[in-house]
Length: 237
Length: 400
Image (cartoon, rainbow over all chains, first blue to last red; front, side, top):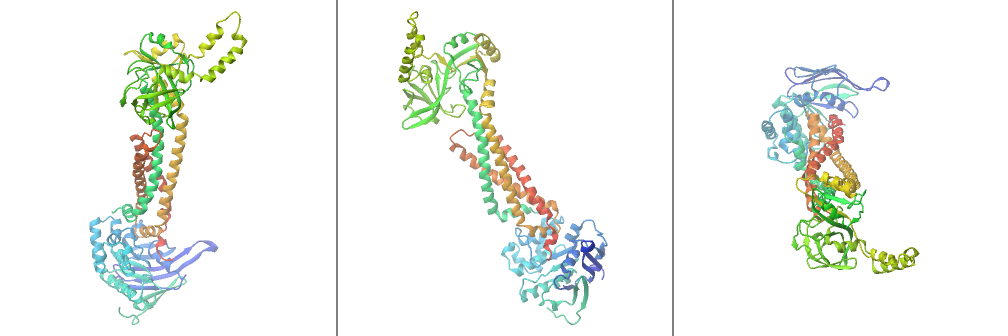
């Protein structure tokens, strides 16, 4: 991998200490190249959410290294000072539910991350509109989230995750509330966006209808990741 | 950066407006409570202003004539009038009572004024209709707040009086509207007993051997005669000559006439500092309670609104929103709620004040202080909600 993408080596996370310590992540190794969409699959309690939180810089891992692009962001300790800015500028999030801000219209929901980064409102909105157009929801730009369908909301959420052009996007069960057709449409969008913006996308999912779409899958069991090379198993969407 | 608070308020404006309306009514009550106190102070000052006096001469060692009863002889004014520095003097009586008007009673302060002319101490300084009292008996000038009209007949004790003039904003320190009648009538109304009581008193005197001594044959008749006359008034109002010091004139009167004299400042202190001090404390307590209740309501509302946005706050934090931006959003919403409440409260107080039976004076400075207090209360009330919001873990937006 070069340039962008994410690399994780020997990542561990321990909750508590002493006799009550729990090793949620024991050995996580992942590499996701720019423009690649990989699946992360595991049973309940396997450590998916903990891994997502570590990757999203929401909680601090206990050991290991994480590299975003050329920048080592964690090496047994955080290597960046401003974790909040790291999340804002380098990591995009797409959730199971879209979690759009209900009091902002579609454009401002998407434009909010660059605005928070200090980009001028007009410029932020122009970036947002360009993304909405790319995701084919530009006609809903002035609508409030409550006026959108589930699929439209998820596309707006994807646009919000992409708007700051982060090197990595973490998608947590992004297709769970959608039917097959819409779920596949969302995965297609993620693939298209990954290629278009050279973004590494990690999709955490249980959704069997989208699992075959991943060319590469990481399984996580008892805090340990295993890579499944899916050459020839994935179908085109 | 867009205003998150503003957008949230616009999005759920109904919630804010209705909550602000409820809070506004509470603030309106608070402003009116302050207005009631101001009205009491103003009533006291108006009473003193309208008496046109520089000095009040009263019974020695009393706080009369408003705060305590005071009786001095009705010929004292002559001696006082001749004192250096005195321009005008006038006897005056005050009696608060229920005045009969048709089928209803009106609580009024009856003021007996000495014959003279407008501008004399004790006289109503201006009329809005009719004329001043010109006869020695059975005429009255009434404040419009009594409800009397020109030509109405009102009853005070045994006598009936015709309303010949109307005045305005002539009230006692308790806010009761005033009725002016001739001094002699007022003295009679204040001190004289009814016929049955006089007969009973004469019977008792006749049976008392002390009053029927052989060596003093006229004593019994003199005693009875003295009991049908009233030579007392409550106070002598004094205007000092231009250039004279009221304090020096007061000292001279106290020294030579053996009476107590109050200057305008001292009388104001008696009325405001003593008479309405307890009421002021009572109102102060109410204001404090209302402030606490308002704070609790704002805190509860803002806290509830914040708890309803926990997931959105978690998402905002996850995508990099600063804590101060989130705190600012909650703070602005609390202040906006307070501003809406204040506007509603000010309007409701302004339109509601005239409906109160006693004078409610809404001072602009009180409103300004109230606005500052509301904003401060809203800021303090938002602290709990801000603490709750800052404790929200961005991880709540991610997975289970």
